[in-house]
Image (cartoon, rainbow, N blue to C red):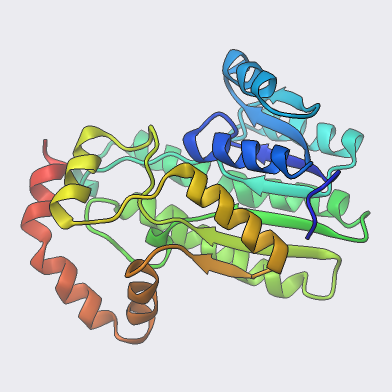
Length: 260
């Protein structure tokens, strides 16, 4: 899908990956609506982008915020929805508060599902439209220390897969991009230390944004970023015992960093 002059609505625009996506789409000529909760941050981002774009201050975890997004999408005749908002907490689930778990499920899964539900009729008005859900490698591999986060991303991936099939005969392309570990403010010091201890490669947000452009250009239904992470996704689907045993062997290291 060509993004030039496409009216795209981007949630999580002020986050690390969101900012990079906004920059890359703006360079490609997209007409953006930047959605987030911090007006000042969104306005600063808007001023830094080439072209003319809009800012929408809305909390997508609330019904009021999602209603504002829908109203704006109708008025602007949005043709692309990119769900990039996300939160993460690195702890073993028994140490997490119920509020923290609920926030991850709501932000990472429920909110994008409800936004897709609301905006599909708007997107159908175009000859060509797209929904892009930003997931995670942890939406395909259950990783200790990220149980609730995995639950939210597994749910988003399953929803996206089903929606791709529901809308296969429509003008709406539904796409799923799963980054691996990425250098953003979502990562606490403990997450950074864990990635170093496990030897995990960490991408820059700009790499995710560039991969998004490739996914859009090729209309790829799904893309899992990174090697060997995309191999582990396949192995976990075919031989989950292998991945299970590999992660269990690292459990002491993971637990140590989760408790720091």
